[in-house]
Amino acid sequence: MQDGYEWCNHILVNAQDGRQQQIDAVPVFSPDGTRFVTANHDLDAHYGHNRVQIFKVIDGMGVVEWSEEPTEWGPENVAWESPARIQFTRKIFVGGGTKAVIEYDAKDAKWNMKDLPADE
Image (cartoon, rainbow, N blue to C red; front, side, top):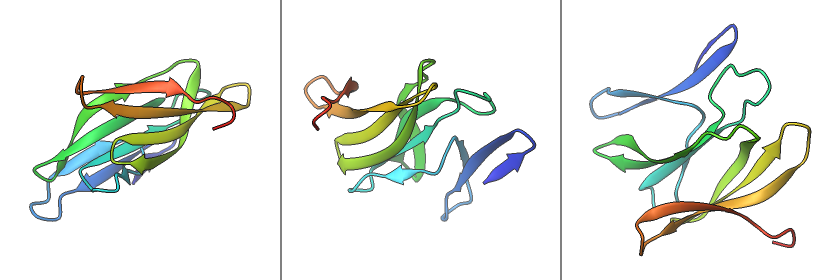
């Protein structure tokens, strides 16, 4: 991790060749190890990106596969439920939040985000 007076980021280092990659937050790896997700919630201070990103691991480095930079909510508590589904909380600036998921649609070959019903 690197940090300064009003900022921070994380550096991934490829153990094989030393290549480095800057990311927003601690990576959370998928159960099969082929992807990782980062989520950084910064609606108030704006010191860092307020975004959630999914990376595909290619040749030992993360390649952004999907990204969302919301302005009304921030991503928190990301957790992989399967290699194709991530659950997280959409944290609202004034407090509270809702559960949401990002799911991979193999038919369309893309990630989709949706809110979960309150009872899930």
